[in-house]
Length: 419
Ligand code: ARG
Image (cartoon, rainbow, N blue to C red):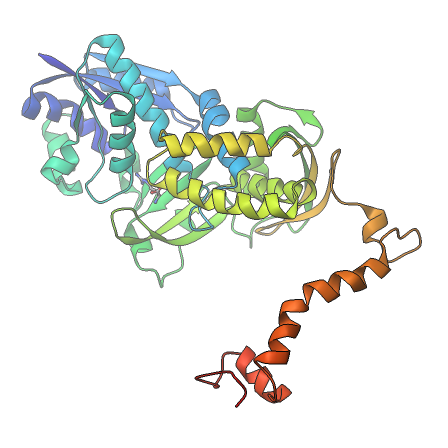
């Protein structure tokens, strides 16, 4: 019997897949469960896989790898999909794909499998990442092949004596890891309806959040968070604590109408308290430590990287190139940012950096000003030169009212020769 390594979460979809892969595809099924920080009983998941027919069940704790090689580089880059989504689900997929490939090599399997449908981004991310790491592996996606539906899955699970998870009562489809929680389906499919409170589990409603503000200080070294309120913490611990603290204040709820890679617009709800606070703090620190030109160019890189991550191209050469640029850009992004959390909002309260480009003697309006005011005059005469030339030649005879209208894009069609 050929072996297949199945990405196994212990949920309904992937539990059904164990007997399904044996019956319909004639596979010997080996499962791989990645611990990415969602609080689950991994021993129970492993036992369930074996009980349901897996011949071997691997569980790998990759929280540290996930943080160091995925969350931190994404944070340094500033990548937010469509300016909003911190990409928790999207970042985890290439890592799970890597584990699938490694286990396949270890056990001598020629195929890997996942439980993604044919409508989402995750199928693309798994497939593309596996093809990048070992193009010779066969990829099996039974939910996509058979267009399995929930009711059929439940029916099939009953027939095969597979315990149906209690979370089956949840009206949502949920994916979670340290970096965030993604919630979709059910009532959320109506973009007009506000997400009900039961869509959220990591964050308090701002209404129930403490009526007291809380400051948190995040210390970065070269763009990586190292201390929380002065205490040195490893990445997993820092994110875990910050998720709890910020979530308690209702920070990190995201309601996003998103463009999937497969062409569908979809309403997605996210909870990412730590990712939201850290992204805001990190970009504040960059405001102190990057030049205007660096910051502008890096924003373009961030948008590009966000698309690459979202579209499953983490292992691509372009991403490798851009990741190199991002890493290099962080060499002075060292310092502390103080954030203020209060009833759903996270705002910057203060920032300082050893290599800050902020020069008080240049900025101040008070005594001690070192800026050369005379130099401004000469600068402006050069800076305004193109405009002055246009005024002399193209706008001759136009009234200020006319120029006001033209500058608002209103009226004034045709030539602007002033005739
Ligand atoms: N829309 C998000 C993304 O594509 C979240 C997907 C959630 N996945 C899931 N299996 N519920 O990254």
